[in-house]
Image (cartoon, rainbow, N blue to C red; front, side, top):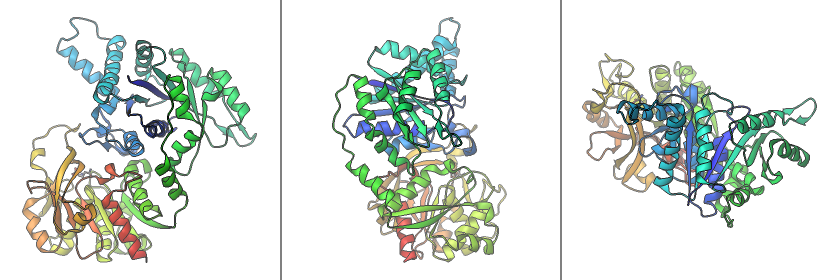
Amino acid sequence: MTKYIFITGGVVSSLGKGIVAASLGKLLRARGFSVAIQKFDPYINVDPGTMSPFQHGEVFVTDDGAETDLDLGHYERFTNTSLHQVNNVTSGSVYQTVIEKERRGEYLGATVQTIPHITNEIKARLLKAKSQFNPDFLIAEIGGTIGDIESLPFIEAIRQFRLEEGIGNSISIHVTLLPYLQTSGELKTKPSQHSVYVLRSYGIQPEILVCRTPVEIHKNEKEKIALFCSVQKDCVFECKDMKSIYEVPLALEAQNMAGVVLKLLNMKDKRPNLASWEKLVDKIKNPKGELTVALAGKYTELNDAYISVVESLKHAGLEFDRKVNIKWLASEDCKDTQKTKELLGDVDALVIPGGFGVRGIEGKLNAIRYARENNLPFLGLCLGLQCAVIEYARNVVGLDGANSTEFDENTKYPVIDLMVEQKNVAGYGGTMRLGSYPCHLKDGSKVQKAYGKKIIEERHRHRYEVNNEYKKLIEDSGLIISGSSPDGLLAEVVEYPKNDWHVACQFHPEFKSRPEEAHPLFKGLIKAALNRKK
Ligand code: GLN
């Protein structure tokens, strides 16, 4: 039988509800329970795939090709699972289903309304996840902040669902903020009290409060929050700002959060196995050295836009007991050879992440050229591969003005072009080549050695590819296509064998890196960077 855990947020957004959900998932998994985590986002976009990363951070991609909220990345990394389309629900997708049903006449003449039709569809999504995974626990995180108009149907659906599933089979966790007033040295509880009042006015009394705070919460403050918010004293948890998000599960375990959750759900507690996670956190806290990786992208003002890439770099660093510092570069800053040399002169490696559109492309090409000519370890991801190919075509093969048709439709040398199956695609939502596809690696290549196998599966999100008409020319000039789709038609990985690590892939390895199991391509990059540093 599945037990349900609902997580809402109060006072402000960006409280780290996703980290709390992922951490609780981790603690339950460490006890041997099966866990599924689902994110409900109140916006009207059918999925975040059409949103600018400036709006909502990175778009995470699952094996089955869903474009999802970045919290799913946290869920996967903390619980070491692979999630699916069903794990991410938006208002847009709920309304889309309901409106399509209405158009098909499935509501038999009824007036279609928020209650019960939208709320029923939300509950159906919970049940769909339950039947797909049949987990011991289904954790459902509701995006946004309590009090938002947009999230009301979700909260109402949870209220109904909790009644229908029976007392003792679900709990509600409210993640809230305790602001600290520097001048009086006080933690203030009033905003949290108000947030819980509002939640209660919707018919939901939370059993647990998780309080984000910059300082320790004293016993008397906890008692006050418990009294005013009507929760038991041992159900108020402190979630202090931490250096690493990976410390959060251990901080919550130290307060016995999972034990309390299990008690509230009438389940017997088990001894958790957190030994390897503790080792991980110990490594994070006590690195044997540091290195700096330049990340040159378009959305560098918002670090969340590249969160999986940054986490993957950290994971790979940990494999070598090193802390990875990121030097954020706006690609446009790499204006010319001199400026690029100044910016990259003091880094140990370069990463060019995925992206869309022409802005910043010339800077990326300058950065890649510098890396290639100076044997600076380089990893290109998706757009990063396309740029690596353009750079090589222009500066080594001699195809002056080579480009992608994404950036210049009339380029004389379209070394990157729209994939054939994309040519007749209309519309932007969910229409790219998405999700997991197999890739065959060339025997003896750097990537094949890094993976230690010949066939891999990685996640994709792109419309353009290396133009087959230029493959031979490029390979003959020394940039090797070391990974291809099984039919050999699509270049998936390129590498420049003369350098220690000059590798780029059409897929997104960052989505499959785990804190306890770094990704081979990121490990390859960090290893080369450390060798160079020596
Ligand atoms: N814009 C490129 C394409 O669509 C790269 C996409 C990406 O980096 N995710 O192919």
